[in-house]
Length: 385
Image (cartoon, rainbow, N blue to C red; front, side):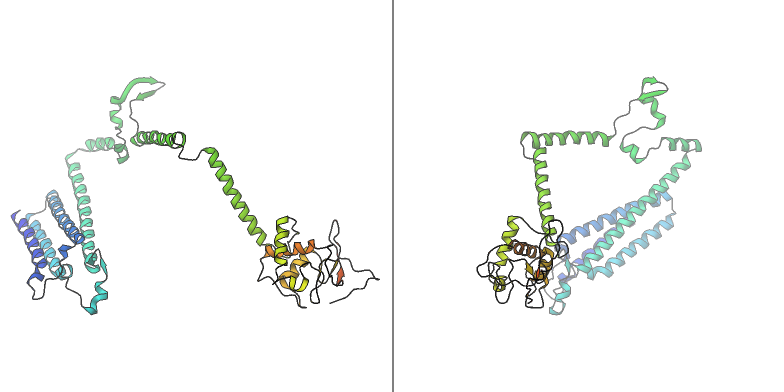
């Protein structure tokens, strides 16, 4: 025991010498590692774990009944290796000189105020010590179990196995089958006996939590009215659903093209189409504000069309333009806006512009059931653009 104490004090002395080395240097003393709280904490943990390892190792050696010679040799080897390790890593752990300009980048890599290399070394030592402690505990448990079985007869070993409870049974404070007689309440029917088994803790504590939750729920929703009622939750859900439906319909409107466009008849759509059409930088330049047309654009109020009078044809003409002066508007207007302009143009049929241009193109009439393009009568003069 005295030799072990000497080894421990020797190790602490080595640590002390390594920590005070900068104080004897010619230069001003550099910041010590012991001024860093994290470093001090890790060093204390290392020392404590080292003491635990020593205690567990002695227990394991005593349990295994090793020879005294092996015990001494093992202690000597372990102590020598530990001293050598701290001697070799002393400069890395404790020397923290002032970095020069060339090492500023390397010194900037710190963790908790310590150099990264020092932190990783100390963390590795801590993990190794924990691993050793776990391994020692497992071996001690195994040896104790082996020694205990040597002292028991085979019948006693079987009895122990029968009365042994799993961790779940111990957690629930259950008793083995051999002790059922102590729990018997004397009530038996059809071979079924009533036992005084206590409720499992997980069930009991869960029940307590439900009572606490019920109290909070009652206060929040029925006393203080801090939370929404069922009616309020329903109304909120309906409002949220309406917002999502409106967004979907809006996106659906933006996905319209010349193959699925339909005539828009709502006043809002017609008004939006009129606002775009009457914009001086758009349609009125060629078709005028009333749709009568000028020397460039045709009349949009009669029944004659150069590129088709169906809503899909008008949408296509606005979207892609023509090769005779009509520009494409697909980069300036969204599909929804093009559909609104096309619907407004269709609504101009039959209006009376101030100075309408002569008819151009092919006569088109909207059939009641199905839209069909009708050619102009033989006696009708058709002027092509």
